Length: 315
Image (cartoon, rainbow, N blue to C red; front, side):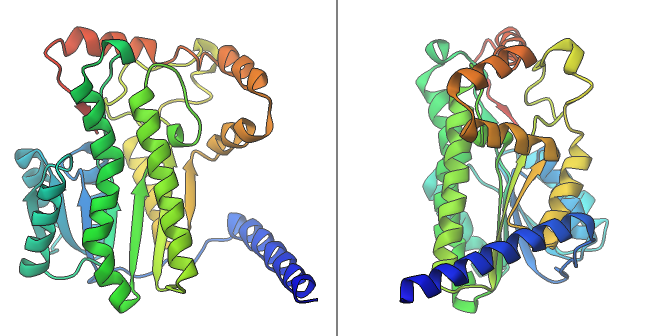
């Protein structure tokens, strides 16, 4: 009998959730205030990280900016300070666990407890798997996936103690479905998506409703990270690379609305669902029609031409 009651309640919750999501699609959601919140952004020296910093600064958040590129990070910090907010910049190598923990200790001692964490940093090797040095493959996984574990262990305890905070994971559409020749990136982003979803379930199971999570899965963003990547010529205008500012603005709307997940553009939900519902051969046929099976080959060629010294492209 208890099972039947729970089943009915689950169906009611299911129906309510679907209806609420449909309504929110057409209505402007209420956005929360982050004025005074301490927001840490990784990869703040890159294109997306800088834009995230400026958008959070406009909202009045205090900023902690992390990047391995000191100069680029300081440039972001100066731009944010011009908007009148408190900014602290740290040089941190996210591929090194100890570097993360040491920087986290400094932030707590010098600034305070982080209440919003935006895991934005990302890299890609840009090489065919069998041609790629092991160290480059490892770095992609360390920065894009493993760092999420260490960042969470460093900052989540303080959020849990107050039952207040927000964990944001900037993943990728390539964490929901894959393509050829970027095995390192796809594996790291699939890992990031799985990590984020599991963490979200854990927080809900512990009734920590004051800690929100948002998973962002954008299509290819025109930051230069995947320069040369292209789908079938006739379809390029239908799914062009995303503009960085648009990507960040859409992400901010989802974060401030406390939306659990957003794919940018919405069209990215289609291949995500198709991957789960269609036979493997059907997905392969679709990839080939769209040119998705070979879309990364021009990108790989560009990287091989420009980075013969083994440089790693980063966002």
